[in-house]
Amino acid sequence: MEGDAQDSTQAAARPAREMIEAHQEPGAGLRGLAAWRAYAREIFNRRFLAYLGPGFLVSVGYMDPGNWGTDLEAGARFGYDLLWVLLASNIMAIVLQALSAKLGLVTNRSLAENCREQFPRPLSLILWVLAELAMMATDLAEFLGAALGFYILLRVPLPIAGLVTGGAVFLILALSRYGYRYVDYVIMGLISVIGLCYVIEIALSQPEWGKVGYHIFVPRVNSQSIVVAVGMLGATVMPHNLFLHSGIIRSRALPGDAGHTGRLIRYATADAIFALMMAWVVNSAIVVVAAAAFHHQSIEVTSITQAHQTLQPLLGSLSAVAFAVALLSSGLSSSVTGTMAGQIVIEGFLNVRFSIWLRRLITMVPAMVVILLRVNEIKVLVLSQVALSLHLPFAIIPLLLFTRDRRLMGQHANRPVMNVAAWTITAIIVFLNVLLLVRIFGGSF
Image 1 (spheres, helix red, strand yellow):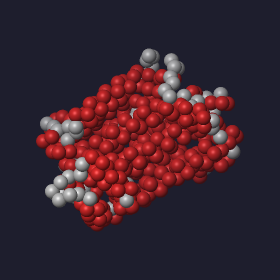
Image 2 (cartoon, rainbow, N blue to C red):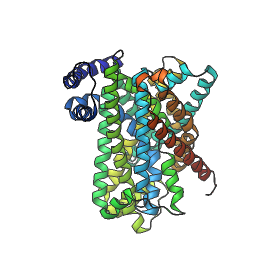
Image 3 (cartoon, rainbow, N blue to C red):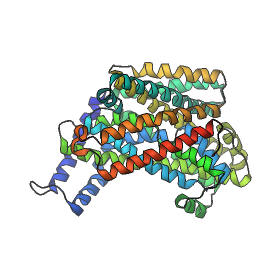
Image 4 (cartoon, one colour):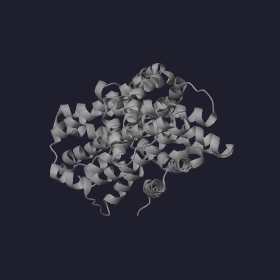
């Protein structure tokens, strides 16, 4: 499966390698302005398109149905005030995802495999169990989001919508037999659909663009909105995405070529930045639409289905349909990447071959049980947030320990400035997740 992707990557890499080497003096590396010019040529050359993909698969986790709840609440209750939170959280996510990609490229092992090899066996098994619990809970929200999309669009009972969702995810995963590149195309297509739907939503809602621009860059928070802001920031980094990124990026790796690994790290970083900025735009659009449609009407939104039902009388049937299509695309794409992340985790921690079909079937069962029991979707979203919050340190801290280890990473180990930035971001995220858990379990601050 990965062989096809590596072959195509190698073919695309040769012209890029020749282009860079042509700008180097014999026996000398690139320095200063010349290095930046060469880097710009790499990134903006059309051959870079051959490397796009992993960042988009990862970005899906940042706009999955689990994020919609906090975004809708932020916009409906506080208007545009919390848009700055999304920008700050996205910057933090980019740093950690770039480190995850670098780990996979340099070691040619996923984060899960590195945990198995670098930590004592009992510790790696504990980390595996925690990762499995977090991803199973997260998958509930992702699967439920897609099922709700089918339920709204097809007007079929929710259990049938769940079965249709399972079938659709299986079909997309079937493309992985021909290489990750084909899955990349489907995911990028679904992300494009989400973006297009929210272009329609924003056009119909007619937001106040002056306030939007102001609140993206100027922090504003009060005693009421701080709780929601913590919820938005606390769920910034998706732990399963760190495992996923370090695993799928290996389809771009070319073992044995240290110089080319450095260039691939730059490509992977640019890919992550581009994809996660798109995710930031989508999440910001959700807040903007909620602010324009609900906040100005003083309408309290308590569920995703209520948001859909409320949009129709406010903005018309086109807006309601666009909302449902975006939700469906978000749920399908995140269910696919969640399943891929689960396979990477179980194979990496246990050193076994595990069928992606069996993985999808196993994780589909709890989701179908939740649907059959008609559990409120908000409760499912809360459960996913709790799982992510509890597991987050156990994914981020090993990542930082590995990427700073010169024995493991060689010349690509984190520099001191990156270590300080990454550990600061980790401390902020973990602290905010603790506050998020306090809020979820009824505390106040």
